[in-house]
Amino acid sequence: MSDVGEYIRRIEIASLWSGRKHIIWNLDRHVNILSGVNGVGKSTIINKVIADLLEHLNNNGVVSSDVKLTYYPKEAKTVRFDVIRSFDRPLIHSNLIEKLTDDKVTTELDWQLYQLQRRYLDYQVNVGNRMISMLTSGDPDVREKAHQEADARTRFQDIIDDLFSETGKKIVRDSNEIFMDQFGEILPPYKLSSGEKQMLVILLTVLVEDRQPYVLFMDEPEVSLHVEWQQKLISLIREINPQVQIILSTHSPAVIMNGWLDAVTEVTDITQ
Image (cartoon, rainbow, N blue to C red; front, side):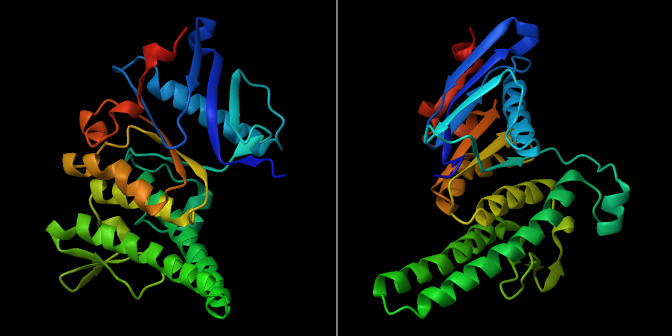
């Protein structure tokens, strides 16, 4: 049995704020929204969990932490996960980044998009190989699944085209990387607005997870997003990958307006 679980069932943090508070948060399989006023600890809680998962990953599962995570299935010892960093701050270049990129990658969102381009290429290769295997199968059910594989990327492209339609931008469909066509001018992702970059980062991250179970952490993803995009965000993520577990913090009413009120947890409700 694999040590990698499908999602997180429960978060416990024993020593938040110098040991004065204890967090117990029972999670939903699909959508979990942490809410509260600024300074109450939303980001602290989410970042603590991310740090624990990263420590587990970097130390071969051996960690010493005040964070306890319970997974599904219960035998699991970790989960696959992605983290969305929404703030489009200037990128502090390291020597490694300067060797890999050029001066057009200047912000954190640019760097995330640069890394996602590589993952997008791998995703397409994996999907292509699976489709070849499925389409050559004599089983009609398997061949139908192959068409569903192709539909996932097409649906992602349709969603981006619809979101960006007011500015006339469309994804270039015959490219193996992400480029936008704006009235005949081909634009690389770094020429998009901060809000467009942010939405592209979020939805592309979801796509390249290839409809597998995993956990998506987002800290105030509404930053830079238009209110209409905030309202659509969770539904679009789940449309691209229904198996994702979303754990996010927000203080934007728009994010929860379209049917997600029951997924909201106040920080005070999980603090002892």
